[in-house]
Image (cartoon, rainbow, N blue to C red):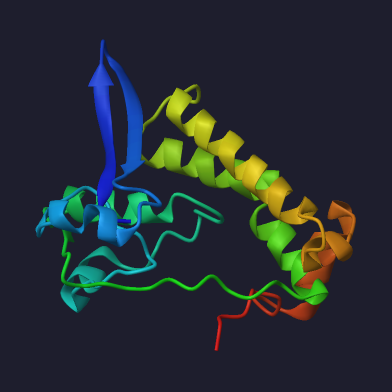
Length: 188
């Protein structure tokens, strides 16, 4: 991602959340000539540098955003506090997705991306930023998260597809193993 937009616009008295990622999934070689250091609305946590005084001023990340919207929330909070967010093309990162999850990771994956946690994150974001419940952009995002989770769980041969566990058992399994015990492992 090469910066993006994350802002609230008001049209005809109705607030709406707008988000887009510039050059999403485009190969760096195809867009490098268009990149320059510039202010932007949002950056992703995959590659983020933040001054410690900003962290001290804002406090910790909003833990009520359980599964999504943490990137735009942080960047919008920085800007609301008078700070600025920049895209810096000289900072290049190669993101390596984590390896396939083990069957023991499935309970946390399903809880982390569950409809319940996605909806809770969405509702909190809407309340925090005074957005209407029917914001079409956020509804599209909720639909995309659901599609993504189902695709990841159903991918033929995936470790997640082979480790089917009924959703009603997830909360107890995650609680029994301790907070964060089933989080996906980072690549080595």
